[in-house]
Length: 112
Image 1 (spheres, helix red, strand yellow):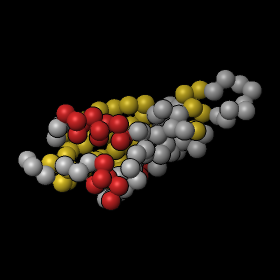
Image 2 (cartoon, rainbow, N blue to C red):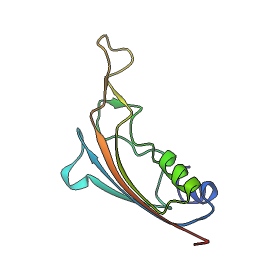
Image 3 (cartoon, rainbow, N blue to C red):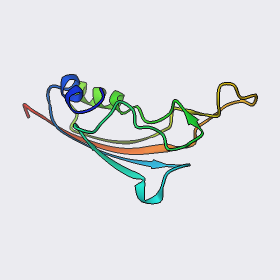
Image 4 (cartoon, rainbow, N blue to C red):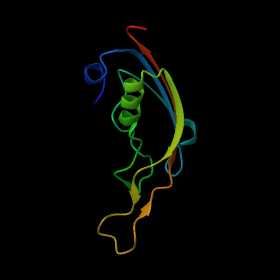
């Protein structure tokens, strides 16, 4: 799921999608912490703002698939970033990224 057309293929029964995500942590600009997405702009993963984070972010597609399978119309929650700080070649132990996300999602279905 990249965005737009791909979203419509993955979620054919969804007519409207509104997602607001607020990221908290390193690399987040104060006036840019809340991001809004629709079915035209959503991607599988929302990239982490922490410059030291690797393979992190919010895997929003998992949440959307779960909502769609349950026919949920609204969902809100918080989750930590899934990435690690540092590089795989680092001599010291890699640490979990400290960034987190609060998200609010609303979905309207075509047949509702």
